[in-house]
Image (cartoon, rainbow over all chains, first blue to last red):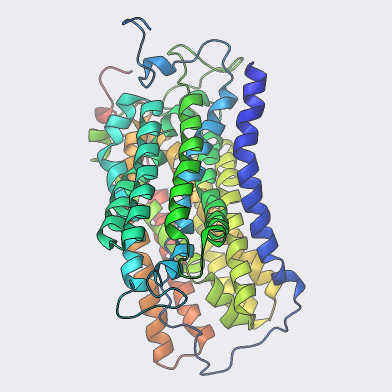
Length: 59
Length: 452
């Protein structure tokens, strides 16, 4: 009984976490696969969004 | 049930029998933490909430504005810190099950009230539901399993709390895509489906959180891990002598750790908050790739919580914080160099390492408190310390945004504008390093006269 509970409990928390991790990896793949040329920012080049508020961190 | 049976929610009812495996407690804690961690995925609702009446587009005359919506999140964060600080003693007294149920009730009923607020287009009800009531649920859920985990894992307290706090980090990785998936399921031509998403999430999260509450147990008073010999109380490897929460927060050690946490949070925001834009501005990548970079950092933020807090069990807490701050400061000042040599890979590696240590800083704090103040009221003390995070999370982003915006408006190139912020972050970490090095064992006059 304890063993069954152990397996169920870990499956219940690992499954959604794995789903979230997989989605995150999937989302970050273009970072390594797009082959976007590295550009040096030009002097005076403006930011894409000056008013974008920075997101608070996680405790 | 006889009248002599302890109530299901009481601490007495959660005392584990001899056959109970302590490895069932981390999934109970993670189940709660990964649900309340959803708050970090809240930004996916911003845009849909801003066009509830306009349908396909924002109606500036009737719809809520983004700054108005932003307050929902800010209120929740403030209430998280306040409730953790105010209810800490009650949490210790009541035991983890009752607190987890209270957390689930507040968090999920907050979601339901917010859903009603969205349906009726009453912003005040969303503030009250998600912000105030939900925020109290966040604070309760965050500190609920802390001291229980450390009592179950006296041999590995850092790893134990690291697992739960890793779950909180993982909550964003689940909550954001879950919110998007549900909204795309419920949306119609005129309704973005936010209310139905809130109701569904309330049900799903209630199920997971109540499962955690049912599963959690506290160890019997005389329990200890098989074959484990406790280190002497007050020794380097053992817990500190018990100090009450009301005394702890008057000691210099508490405030030094408060500075440590505050500096760690403020510095982390330098990368986390600007990750996507920074990647785009420094390396000319698209917004989609920048978003992917932010997601990758979230992954390292989560993984670092488990990895570094486990490392702290081997090295000691003071050493691992010295690594965070010293190595972190060096890495921050090296970020402009990675841009200078044009290495995107190195930039990603450096920032990922910084963020892993930032997450580690959060996850190691409970064990550091246990080393100094013992396990007696460590959850309550942790609750009060979280006010450092609340302050840094509200003030820090505004400060950083102000500096970088002012620099850019003054005509400073984007790359150099980021440099100023990064050097500032590095300086904050050095302040944290000094505070960490000043931490000494708590003076004996603060110890409880009768050790629990």
